[in-house]
Image (cartoon, rainbow, N blue to C red; front, side, top):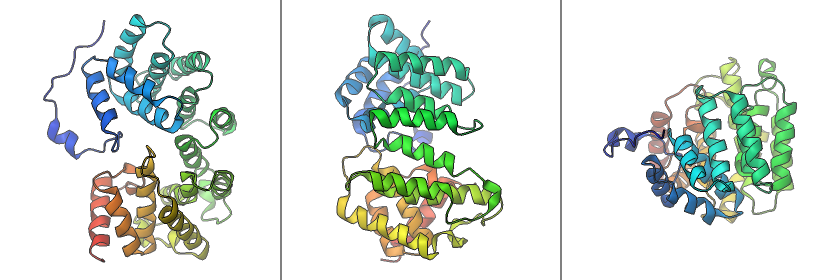
Length: 316
């Protein structure tokens, strides 16, 4: 039996203050709201409209899957359209999110992803779901194989590269700072392999922040990232400059996850002490902060973002 729709007036004040995974995708916000009320037709149309724009499709399916009753309503969709590959993919990602919240067995979520991959063989999104399920598992072999399946379908998959960077950053946590750590090599390789206008050019900045998170948790870096020397070494400055220069030349207004990159880049510029450059990025971010990297290593992301933004905007 499908769950009852939640009340229309639920927690509006609280929701307004929370991070919104939809970022600035107004159509996604609308479809998610409809799905929360059991109206899955809007989600069906939205996913279909995404076509083979794999970053867009992956972003939208992942966000829709976060809705607590997404799995139940998507099962209703499948009852109405048993052959729908899109419904199968959304159900798989919804089960992944349930597994990550401890409400579903991971193996059931994996099976759902494998079924979706069979239904939609060209779609990297079911493999993205499998990659999400690798969080916290031992060994990297399985994650690497899944990542290669994503890349075989779409070599520049934004979200998948971010997941791999976060995972690789956790290798050898106790070794301390190492400018030659494998996460930097991976990020540089991915950025070099991608087309000149690919947002993967920002990936070395992501690697830097993820490695800081790991080092700070291990006690090798201070809990205040701005007080760390992690962003001010010669190599780090080269990485930050190259990423900022890329943004000035190639900024992608239409990329569905560009605000994720902008938050990482603004955070890096704040930590580097480049207030004017950070201010330019904060203007682009507007009211769309992301938890990462402002929460790193154990901070309140909203407070950290606001403090950094206010400081940067006060420099211009």
